[in-house]
Length: 444
Image 1 (cartoon, rainbow, N blue to C red):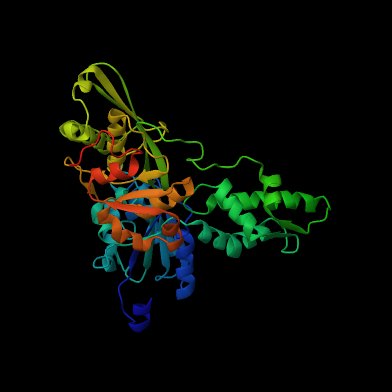
Image 2 (spheres, rainbow, N blue to C red):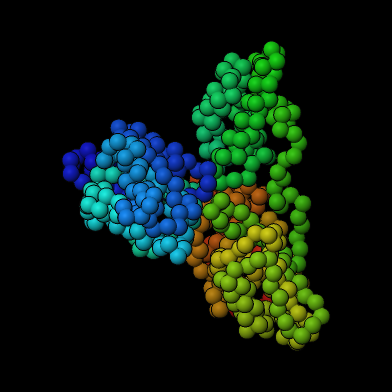
């Protein structure tokens, strides 16, 4: 915006806002247009699988029409709007062509001054448009397309941020939308915090808004019947209107157990914790892996087994046990697909705990990829994972030492509530996570 103020002629910027649902990506796009004094237009790319939807149909076809970009320009009536293309990661290929390939020219600042829509069949200058794209999962955006955009990450909100958003924006909007006035209903800060911590488990604020809307509707019923509506919504009122079905922290009822390790995961919906379970049964050295795990996560399990077998003597494990038993590794919540290398440390810890019969501390969670030599390797999504650990009631989080630089992005109140342990090797993980670090483990 500063550059556009200083220079009259400048090429359009291509921004891509990446983050979980409900973190305000579309709202920011509208705010950018408003602050620049430009018109705002939005088009959703979710499910688009025809190249002609982007480039337009040739006029020789029956029912031909311009592509989505030209249609939006015709609708808004100016050539320099802020144009938001939503859900860029939800494009799909088909026998009708690749729509992401058709976007390459439109979203390249060096080429889009001569964009040709097949319906118009003449060059059209798109360089005046400020494109803003949104996505939940950047890995699903084709690499050539991703290369043309500037990525701005929208991380998960912590409790304090959600309370501030609800207090200053959501409650005011919902009061008006439900036919109420500020005199009819007022939310206390404690009540909003109670809703955030006990009725929602999300990265954004969409569920939080639904809960606040539900309370407003119940007050609207009382007002519609002619009753008195000078309500101050406190914790007791929240329980009355939303019920007692609280979301309890995942760690609330757990105890130190052998072969069960707490890992940290990241998804487009934010961070979460997952439990990695390992058990033995009589058999003949077979390995079974369940829980809808992707190929990368299955490879992490294989690496963990290989590391343990190659270091069995140092770990105090009898190799003859492998011949007598089958090993079963499972990650609960079996309906949800899981993938990625960041559970490597957790899987290795669970297996070593199982064979050494040493329980794992329930308040310890970990994330990190493991190498064949036991090194803890860097992973992504650390902020969301650490926030998820705090919400779940975790006290100690083990991370790879190479991820220390990512702690700068995490709010201080989150870091102060957790004991962060950076490690370089699985030996350090075992020393922290196992309840009896000396029994059966020799120094490497």
